[in-house]
Each structure stands twice: as C-alpha cells, then as structure tokens.
Image (cartoon, rainbow, N blue to C red; front, side, top):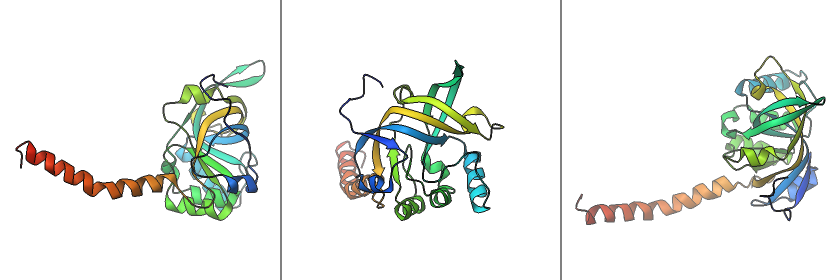
Length: 214
C-alpha cells in the first residue's frame, strides 16, 4: 500500500455482503481488499450483457461480486501475473449495458470514474450495490493496491479489454459516490450547481457591464 494513503482509512473486503453494501453512505472513503472483476472494454460490456440476457455463462463466475470499469496491463513474474498498472475509465460509457449486468449478476459493488446514469443507479438500488468513485489521474497510486491478476477471459481482445479477475490489497482510496439506496453524490453536485447558476449568470452580466461590453 502506498505511503500516500492514510493507514487509518477503513478497509473493506470484496465481494461485499449485502448488509455491508447497504450500510455504506455517500462520502465514505475506504481501502479495498479481496477480489474484483474488471475491464475497460466497451465491446466486453456488450458481450457480457448479451451473454447474460441469453442465459450463457461468462468466462468465470461473477454472481454477487464487484466489477470495476478499469483497464490493466500485467507482466509475468515467478508464475504470477503482476500488474504494471491499473487505470479506471469513465463509467457512463457503459450505461447501456450496466443495468442488465447489475441485475443479472446481483453485483454488490461497481466503480470507476464519473458515476453512472439513472437507469444504472435504479438497478443498483434494487439489488443493493454501491458505486466506488476512483480519483482521476491516480493510476500510480491505485496500481499499488492491485496485488495480482488471477485470470482473464475473452483473450481474443486486447489486454485492457479482457475480462480480468484481480486480487486487491489496500486498493484506494475510493469513495462511495452512489450508495445502495439510490443516493448519488453526482446528483447532489449537479443540483448544487444548478441552484448557483442564476447567481453566476448575474455576476457575469454585471462584470460584462462594468467592462463596457454591454
């Protein structure tokens, strides 16, 4: 674990129990241990959703697990796949597929950058799933908490797009940005910005008049 991460942060083990997932609140910041599936591939999400809708299996079991929107690159050392890096990607890219994936797999946690759309949030509320937000530009820090790649599926895809299973140790920090009850930090921020917009526009208009551009 990186020296830059506070050792006082709570640690959770993936996959989360439904009770723990529902107990987490927006703004909770934690470190993660345990196992997670991940991919950064749009085509991978397409394959996952199609397989689940058609009742076909995935490359490895994922029921109730954690699933992150994250790419990775690994090297082999002494028979183990050691990460060169992991890097989160924008979750809204996959909004067309995530409601199906969340419901069919009963995910307990998902995560990436930028949150997810209303349909995904509603699916999370139904099954009791949280969204962990990861800091953008923090790949070196996050990579220190990715201990080992355990397996991959759909190896016809490039490495970052393969469906991969990782073991985590002190991964983070990550923040609960959407809780298992449908509350979203992103919605709160958007509402706060909307409330401030009239004041911002008024201040801009006043500045324009003062500058003689009116």
